[in-house]
Length: 407
Picture 1 (cartoon, rainbow, N blue to C red):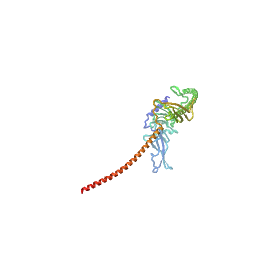
Picture 2 (cartoon, rainbow, N blue to C red):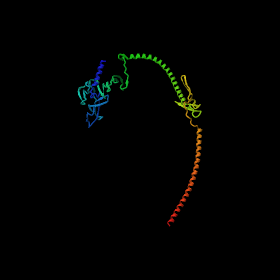
Picture 3 (cartoon, one colour):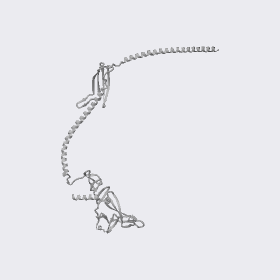
Picture 4 (cartoon, rainbow, N blue to C red):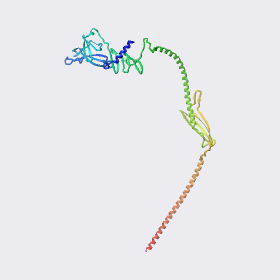
């Protein structure tokens, strides 16, 4: 455990101390390309050969660094210049790309983009050789350490620390250190402490607590079964009570309808010795009808009685029942001075007949007066005519008298 702690601390230090400007790739990549003949058999080695790239496996981005043609030759049938493939490729202890061709090794300078001959190729004595590169890459604030392309540890920009290709993850969140795991596709997966390892929290075995809880659950299961039976009985009682409540509500609605219908009946006989009436009432989908009368015993006392019936049947609840019929009886007694009753219809008719008779007499007198007025007008006309004639005669006499005097 001490060695693991030192290794993780060192890797974390590498992630924290990596220069972002240099932590942008984790693989060397070589692609050998040929080229068509140009100007007869002339060729330009800068256009074909072993092209060197740096590759970021996290982003999939490749960056061209330089090219070199090892052993150029002209392929007559293809009419194409071609280069030999390198005999070997490796990464030395300094992390530089080393290419073997023939008996020589060539080291690639990433700054100049050129290869330099580093001497005899020691790999020529071996069938194959492989380097052990440790690469640190960065993307969008996340840093990763990989060995031969396999992720070892990655620090995400959000603070998550991923260990392994299928990640074991830990992160501090609001004062709590969370631990969980995801597969390569980002899907949550279980964390299994196996091979006899006893997971403990504060020195207490989690599995021991689980075993103890199992025994408690078994005991509780028996108690739960008993409670289930009690609950089932209570459920039946509750259902019965619900039915009674529903029936009681049905009955209350009927009682309200009975009372409403009863309120439409007369209680006092005013202008006749007996008054009767029929009424209806409704409430909450229930309807009732009522019939009742009021009897005028004298000017001060009236007696009334009535009954009503609700449609839809009676309502039974528990041991009780609400009836479909209701009845009432009562009296009204007047105290103090009584107001004089208004005239009856016969009295009003008699008064109306007297008024009509008086009107007829007045109309006859008016007709007689009109006749007299017409006679007077006729006499006045005759008198006016006579007066006009007399005035004409008098005027003629005056004129004759004046004529005599002038002579």
